[in-house]
Length: 83
Image 1 (tube, rainbow, N blue to C red):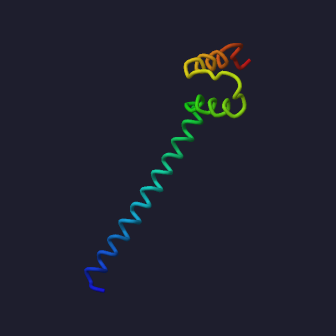
Image 2 (cartoon, one colour):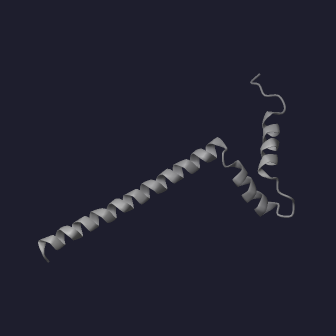
Image 3 (cartoon, rainbow, N blue to C red):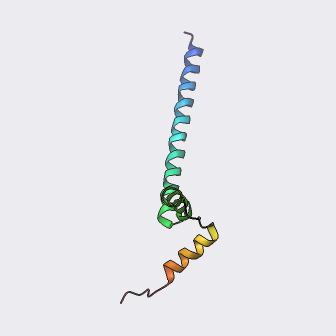
């Protein structure tokens, strides 16, 4: 093995490891974003669609706008106070 060949192999190895690290970082960031969406309620409609199709397939599904309006009414109707 020539010296040049060894350097090329080393560079290729480092390049491959760098790509693997970047893929791992990208996956981690996507997971963090998914958790933030879930905690903030931003993915509520997607979760509704998944639940509705699994459990209530025979009933009509709300569109995104109707779901949002219904959620706002559910969230803010009634007494909302601490005491």
